[in-house]
Length: 67
Image (tube, rainbow, N blue to C red; front, side, top):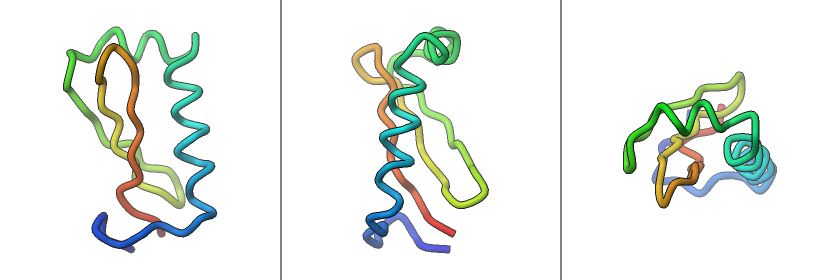
């Protein structure tokens, strides 16, 4: 597993974009509604660990690590 201080591979960038679109769209509204401004959570998939933070009323998705 990579630490968040290492550069992610280019193949990982689309996963950040995909989750950003989903969480900031209609399907993600209920998730954002439950978060306070500045609050975050960790999302783990089979290949990635992402940090999602509510900032400016939107989800900001950050890649933490890649498996």
